[in-house]
Image 1: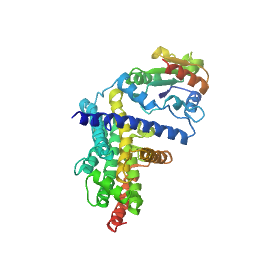
Image 2: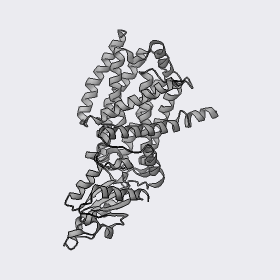
Image 3: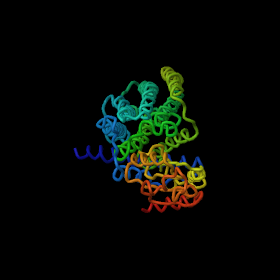
Image 4: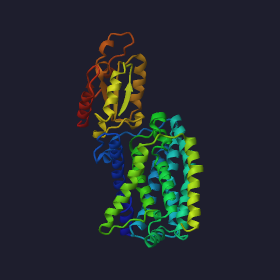
Amino acid sequence: MYKDLLYYLIFPGFIFISVAGAFLSWFDRKITAWVQFRKGPPVLQPFYDFFKLLLVKETILPAGGSRLTFLMAPVFALAGASVSGILIMLPALGLKSGFSGDIIVIFYMLAIPSVTYMIGALAAGNPMASVGASREMKLIISYELTFLLIVAAIILKADMSIKVQDIILAQVEKGPFIGSLSGILLFVAFVFCMQAKLGLVPFDMAEAETEITHGSFIEYSGTAYAFIRLTKYMMLFILPAFLCIILLGGFRTDGIHLLWTVMKMIGVVLLITLIRNTNPRVRIDQAMRFFFIWMNLLVIAAIVLIYFGL
Amino acid sequence: MFHFGGASCNNCDIEILACLTPRFDVERFGMQLVGTIRHADVLLVNGSINQKDKVRLLELYEQAPKPILVVAIGACGCTGGIFAEGNTFAGPVDKIIPVDAYIPGCPPKPEAIIAGIVKLLHK
């Protein structure tokens, strides 16, 4: 009982994921600064930002919106992110075996933060937030199908097992899934889905600072915004971790393999940071076409390849 | 950090932007330009404030989540500069909202802006 609580709240649950995610968010900002020949922020900057928002700043409620929905949306986002994080990290580190079908639960939990951002934005009663919410909705519609197809392809590749632990074990036996042609196609599609889920350039049209001034988050301040920031930090850890588990062969924490695990995570975050720094923001219709036609075709091609055993 | 430009001659605006560029880079101190006042901790005000700007500046200050630091940049923001005796001039920034730091100059060099902002960091 106490051990479960420890797992869920401290390691590898809530606090571990938040701290690791905050570190990755610093890494992201630092790499962005280096790409632009700048110096970049100090290591503790994400922590300063979070605690400043949580403890010091005033939370302003919108006069024209639904206050309860506005305030509850970040809480649900945080809950969705932490539950999916725990479900991913427990089998990944071999602490608990998970249950049959947990990859499907993870898939739904990962969708919760985006949906709650949208609901919170619609409750804010701000025209810019509505524009952001409508774009977020279109983006969810476009990338979730691709994401579901990727999960289906992984399940097919792991001999129809719908348990995260079995997927990891299948990779331990046969080598990581990315070592095959279909694995590479799935990796490419997953990286773009991740970019859209994290709201990074080229798919950040829901919170475009320069045109709709942070869109969905425009009315958030203080503690509510701190929760959103924390969710963003956690998602920046959870999605690369999920990618490592389903395609890159999972985590190992014994001896020198720990270093290799950390390298995998940092490599994936480096990749998405470089993509976000070298691309322009696309329009929402371009993003929808990109996911609906090209990414879905890519994943379906991967599924056909898996069927032929490649 | 949120940037409010009053009726400025754009010179201070350009010096503020220079602070964000690779040569000066205020992100070293963890500062980023944000798009909405709700996320801001520092409100930069430059340019002379005329009657129409005054209404907007007050509205912006009321929308800001407290505590917020206000920085008046440039001679116009601090004292009114050459516009101080103009018809439409509505007073320097500190007559309208409380100001935490003044960065004088016409325009202030980016080094001066960074020096002023770093003083606020220790506040």
